[in-house]
Picture 1 (cartoon, rainbow, N blue to C red):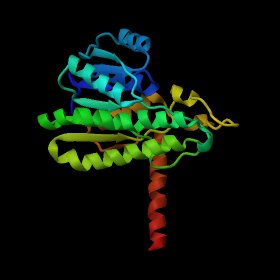
Picture 2 (cartoon, rainbow, N blue to C red; picture 1 turned 90 degrees about the vertical axis):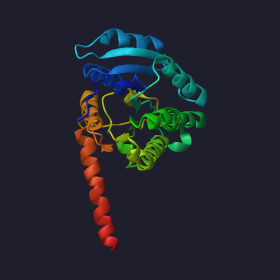
Picture 3 (cartoon, rainbow, N blue to C red; picture 1 turned 180 degrees about the vertical axis):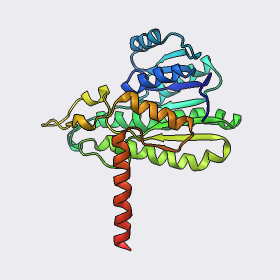
Picture 4 (cartoon, helix red, strand yellow; picture 1 turned 120 degrees about the vertical axis):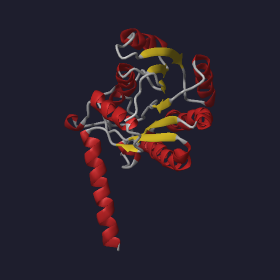
Length: 260
């Protein structure tokens, strides 16, 4: 299991529920963090609460960035280079959701979702990967979702972005695994984060999630970091994600047997 002590890690979406947990737990493991998010004051608040950890973790940069377009991604990349020439781990965590029947979600909302959830991940990976390949070391982390292998009703664009994340990660892994670069794809289920309070579109409330299956964000990220340290390709953090992954594989196996 690789040590994260002194590793320079960029976390996008650092002001969200998962992002804050990543920052807190990686900081406690001695990582040197660059936190990116759209709310500058919240980034400063997170940094202030973390301070310096006993393990040597510290915040080396705060970057206010809007990843809903290429310009914002380029600005984030350039700011990172001003802080450090090397990023050891890129955690593509930024993401939003638009609840509702697909045809009732405003087009600009689901297009923005695709920009942030999928295209920003591809753009940032495209920018940071060459230096990693040159050093023959680096780690790309992608925040997919259970909705990335099981389509979620009333979250069609979100599911499409997470399926895309999964395909991107699996394909990228095939290209870079022999070149010293690790890829980890995370597939969490719904957790107790602010994304559950995102806006509904259309004539009815659609985001009804039974509380008993909502996972704890701190536990999800703890398992995610464990998978990252073990250099796993696929991580299903949290009990609900594991159950759904198992059931999905079972259905696929039994379905293929019946066809045969």
